[in-house]
Length: 583
Ligand SMILES: Nc1ncnc2c1ncn2[C@@H]1O[C@H](COP(=O)(O)OP(=O)(O)OP(=O)(O)O)[C@@H](O)[C@H]1O
Ligand SMILES: [Mg+2]
Image (cartoon, rainbow, N blue to C red; front, side, top):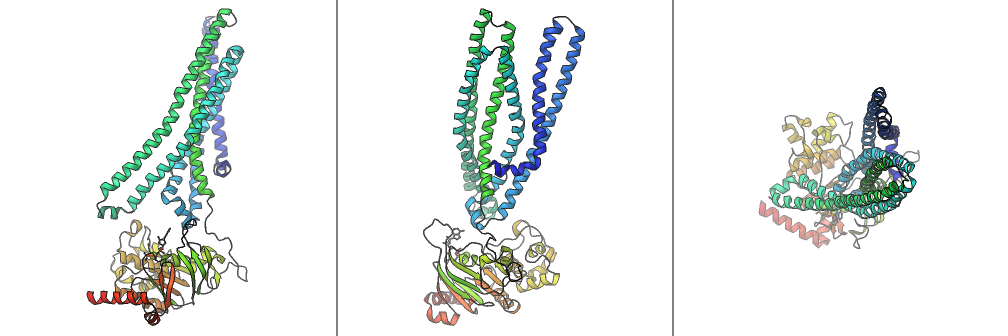
């Protein structure tokens, strides 16, 4: 785990070293001050030497100042190192998440990834910051006080040396119990974040169903759960205290008992016994610091594991097996032909049922293909395999005569443009969003794409045209307008394959027809896959696929399917009736 995390701290190695050095020096000077003090008492006061007292007093002030300066230095260095480490770690995690395939993200859940990027990293950087001070100070104090107390009396120290293993066992016991609790604490944080994220993302739905009260309850429940878990975890940490105190006080009583006997027997001076108590309290203080530090460490181990899990997650889909063309450049997609060869697929590798079953399909380049089928019949799943959003479980999906895995992701997805069913625009202007399709598109090209997607009519009516600000997630445009902008964005890529997943569902029938005829004229070369609910949207296609329960139930032209496919005929009839009732 350290191996995975250390590279992100390494650039701050110098700061860490400086911070550790400062903390150690701070502790050393703090330990030296009592020595000067004892000189003042033993020599200065005893001899009534005022000059000596003033000189030593001055020395004490100077030492205190130096110690303060080192303390400040330690604080500054450890903050820089801690924050820098945190920033590096977040950056590495975020960059890695960008490589994830959908299936990777679904495995972690978005909310958990957010916690792992924020909360978990914060805990790690806090630990580094605090650890640099405490983990250095405490051992330095501990060792020096131990040495000094053993110098006073080895015999008396054996009492204390016997108590140490007890302390260690107690701490170890608590640590083994508290570790899993911290892990569950972070999971509860995930659960809370999930509620918040879903609620805020879907706030319009929440409001329209007047579900605020229900949502508040849901939040309260998770919040309570989080509170209870952290009370339990930190309660365990706090139990540490009384146990420590018990052992510490026991030790002090034992030292009093044995020390007292030694004083009576004349083997130990009474002044020495008093000094001995000062050191013992120092030793105990530092032991407590160390044990607290271990508690903190066990929390950050839980967090570190979660971060490393993300960093170690292998993207499910990579450019791994990319082929090259004859000239050595990465394989380019030659044309828009698409082949499915005995393709089966399921989202969850453990589930027994296939979502897509043994699909065979050949689509020639440039064809227009309509895809119909009931809800959940795996239409979206089928087309998601073409730009390799998911990887086929069995069989091969090919584009342009090569398996999709033979291309680099960039080449494949530049050639295959997909308008998702749940499409998204990002905050920024319309122009900025369209430029995702082609960063170098000219003004003319932008408008041409908008015309093809029938987005020009409403854009012309907007006061700022292409420079209209969309707001977060594109809230400033209607559902149908958003769909048309997403189509325009996809067209700008000048794809070899264009996939529209129910992308004109919110567009009126006349506009839908206009968009389709624009495709036929302007994207003649591209293979067009159109998933639709309305038969009218796919009627003129070269080929229509009827999906049913993860299989292609029938395929053919409109006329052929009317002849041969009962499902198709039924859908067609029912929609015709719909039209006649409407009209
Ligand atoms: N990300 C996912 N993880 C797990 N199962 C999924 C996922 N997406 C879809 N499914 C399942 O796969 C099946 C097919 O879903 P798919 O989205 O392909 O249907 P669809 O034909 O596009 O439906 P619709 O017309 O409603 O869009 C459904 O039963 C669904 O439960
Ligand atoms: Mg779908």
